Length: 307
Ligand SMILES: C[S@@+](CC[C@H](N)C(=O)[O-])C[C@H]1O[C@@H](n2cnc3c(N)ncnc32)[C@H](O)[C@@H]1O
Image (cartoon, rainbow, N blue to C red; front, side, top):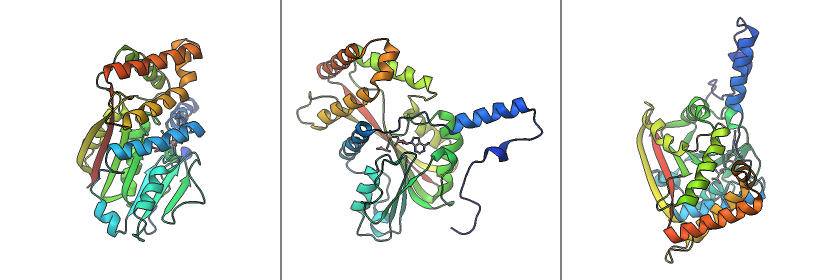
């Protein structure tokens, strides 16, 4: 780790050119503020529970907590793992417990909101409260694996490409892996209610400077980066609702989706210009439609290696 000047903290002042006219400086500082401000949902109790449920949904869907080929390293270590935007820390806690017998591994979660546990947690886990957009409080080449779960709707494209991805590449070791687990949007067998809700959700995201299709960008960004190799993407589908009797994940997906639509109800109903009762009716019709049409919802896992 050494003494390199690597722990990054982006500094407004250092970026300002004092010879520039004040108006230009304030324009730049507005842009900088925009770059570093999250317009994301900070998890409340309902969202926290939903995130915990999503963790187990994804774990079952992908037959484990990750697809990157790092099992051996995790078992024999030393292996240092980072979960960015860890939320309640469910992934970190699960990984910490799973690989507890390897005393050389450590699992670190970082989030702007302290919804993660502080006291009761496996000894090989740590949590840090920090804003990712201020730069990551780690040395260069520190991590063997960086995981990001459901963060696609938390940051704008420019935040991803200018701040977050360069920072991830800085803190991952050469040969280390980066992995994104992300809900998709292009459902199979979706109908008009799905389209209606999805369209209004997308418009709401665009208004907050978030690209609702960021999930499709991750692979593209990784492929176009010369410091990245071995790029993979796997998409798996879950039935929405109880139409597939053999797949219990469908009911969990329904419940999870329903909670998300509840969390978003004030924003989406306002956008649709309908009251909450009408919004509830719309959501009910949406799930009836999913059962009738046998809708399947995609989840993406994108992983790659740093050269
Ligand atoms: C949709 S949640 C995903 C949480 C977790 N990865 C999971 O899958 O359960 C997005 C998380 O990103 C965190 N977040 C958003 N902006 C952030 C920032 N600027 N710095 C650190 N964390 C941030 C939020 O607090 C939230 O916990």
